[in-house]
Image (cartoon, rainbow, N blue to C red):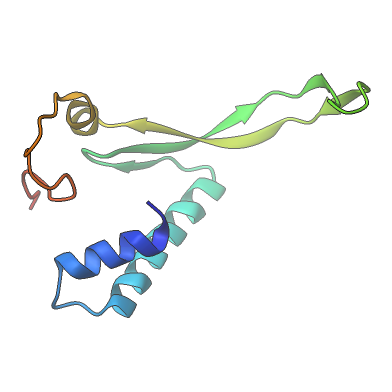
Length: 109
């Protein structure tokens, strides 16, 4: 699923919201997650999972075309760890006719 599909699905599930408003909310949420990760904070979304930055150590590698040895610098990457509820949902057995997977089984208040 890409961003526009996510926005369309949310708008269809919430007909009282305009798609442009859903797009604005999704943009703000993603921007806040990005800002937190950029500043080194961990982002935890209960029952969904957590995002954190992870440092990848520098190393030596080879250029696949030339075979020359190159130095790869230390850099940051993003790690995602699914929450317990997400792991359970991902690993449950599925059967045909189980319903629409985009519909939540329960709503968290």
